[in-house]
Amino acid sequence: MTTCDAGAMRRSFRERIHGKLLPAVPVPMTADYAIHRKAQDAYVRYMSSHQVGGVAVWAHTGRGLHLERDTRMEIMKSWRDGFSDGRLVIAGVGALPDATLPEDKRLSKFQDDTVRMAEDALEAGADAFLVYAPVIYRDRPDQDELVADYHRRLAQYGVPLVLFYLYRGAGGISYSHELLDALMSIPQACAIKLATLDSVTTYQDVARAINEKHPDLSLITGEDRMVGYTLMRGGVSALIGMGSACTKPQVDLLNHWFSGNAAAFLDLSSKVDDFSEVTFAKPMDWYIIRQLWCLVLEGVIPEDAAHDVLGRTISRDEVRLLEATMKRLGWL
Image (tube, rainbow, N blue to C red):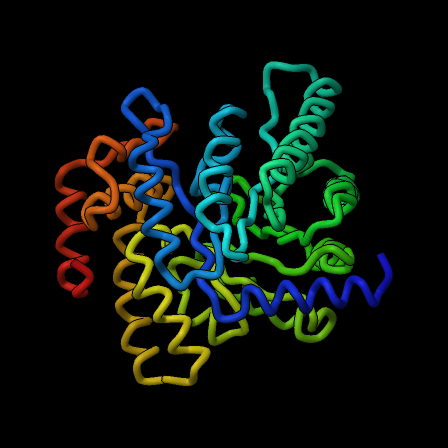
């Protein structure tokens, strides 16, 4: 890819995401962890009715690395059909290490699984890849070289890459400044999603590095617990699991910021923070089942569709807390 082509790809991608909410979507499931198809259809209709810029499918929120291939493909087709109007469908791409295998076979399977997921995503109509951190290389002496090569192989598919800086506690890798610079120099790398959870300094440092060295690369906030601040600090879009429910006020938040309506933005930012503090609370990985229950409370999906494939559950008291918060915010 020439420098000119890379620049055009980055500009085109930024135009499609600028000022937009990109919800990372969960999968409504039955009690035996099959797709709840009626709920899934209703959910796609709900999301497509909002002014989102697209959706992220197979991301962490959608348990993409934990779904069987047939399930993944059905879910991707559902979202692609529902967003056939030109809005983005971004596919999470990566793999999970198989701890039962010896190292050489584990590495080979990890790479093969990643390739298959990437090719499946393209076959199903995905517009871009959200690249999971290749955790199989984490803490190896040659970690940075392996991670960079991994991303370069995915870049060969020719679609925009959204780099993914995910905090270590959620299964990510703390990329060094040198590695981030190498990744952001890949021509097909059009954006980076930052999800540090609680490291304001990391977000600031990466935002500054983008401004200074890669100004045509888009910074996407993935910071559910500090959306407003991270938009003010340079985020041009928000790709967040929190956007999967109570979507409209979060769309409005971005609209207020990018239209310069400061008073409305500050007021709504405080409310979105309140919502994040009950949905993205410890234990953090339970946010997915909380988001599904928020969809139940909104009347989008039935209660029997609020199941997480990893078996996470929440108590009735926590459901009542979610409901009380949504009512207090005026979202119910």
